[in-house]
Length: 176
Image 1 (cartoon, rainbow, N blue to C red):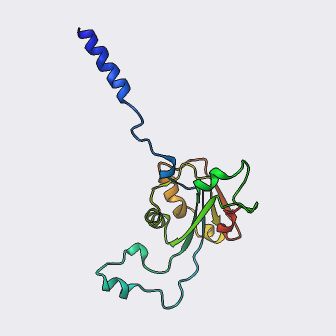
Image 2: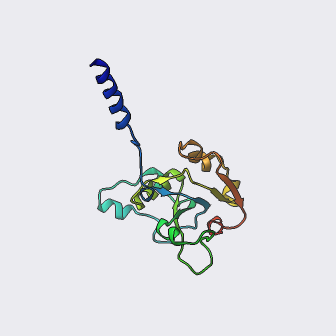
Image 3: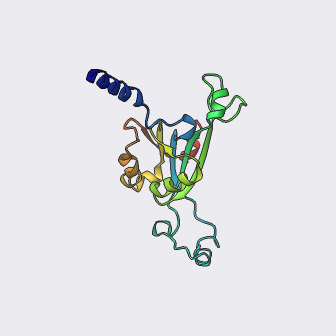
């Protein structure tokens, strides 16, 4: 009798375990590529949000003060369109639907932009499928350690992600 209870308990433990962290493909924001460029200056008259924020009793975060230094372009796949593409079809040419979506945001650090990026999607960004980080040459001359710090520290980031430096605007290279 005791052996039957033990076997029943072991079978229950075996069958009750499962994919506790299972998440559907459609509920993840797969990031395929990131391009980092110098940010263009904010047009005159739009520099300060003090009046806007004071009307709403909101404080401006220190991270967001001043002109943004960088422009980050994050490339995501459009899963519904990628499913309908024949094998070997990319995002450029062919006259078909776009299979990627590029979102460009400006900020002083990738951490700041990543927080903003998370608010724009219904699902969290997922960096395990990140293929490339493309950095403009002018940004790279300022130093790579600050720019790549978040990528090195993120536990989801693959260590085999390729990093490219280009003399041209990096966001246009993501389309290739």
